Length: 275
Image (cartoon, rainbow, N blue to C red):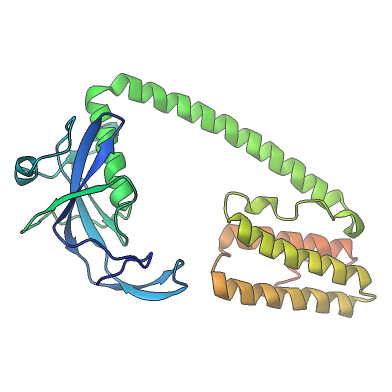
């Protein structure tokens, strides 16, 4: 059994899957080949695995019913050109099996697909591209109008989110160590990190606040920061969550807490952190 990055059994080379295009149409794809295994981390299994990627090829076929064996036998690879791009084969790579909604309908004895650069949008990417190509060919006006509406909505939401974040950061910066109890400490992590991970770090930051409030001198305050940062190091060794944006936000809030306790300087965690 070959396991994917999610720890579940990968489909076999040659397996064919049908998927929905909108509410009334179907397309299909097949596993064309496997790549050489790569050593990757499985967040589901909490360990490293040797995992091959699957090259998933999409058929240039759309129907109102599930494809027949004759449809599969006559398959050819879809070449996408939506949004005015240069036509390219719709072959995408995935380290896992198909998501819910994909239905296995058969197996090809000698599967193949063009050699392409490895784009890792996988099964979901194949479904998205087949759907968008059909819309580009048959409903282009509506598709472009919907795109413009979505862009306007996204821009408005981005402005609202930015304003809300600025307000939260201003409240945090203004607060003293004694009245941070109900204030969100890491609003910058919303959308970057899952709620469970944010809560874990908030707990450690509130521990830091408690330690800073009782620390009497600079040495004790820096020792409090060091103790909490070492705990964050251990947490990040397990989770691997902290990247560039997360690091900058976390370093900023630790600086703010240190400044509220009377410390001065930038990147107070820098001497102790390994993230």
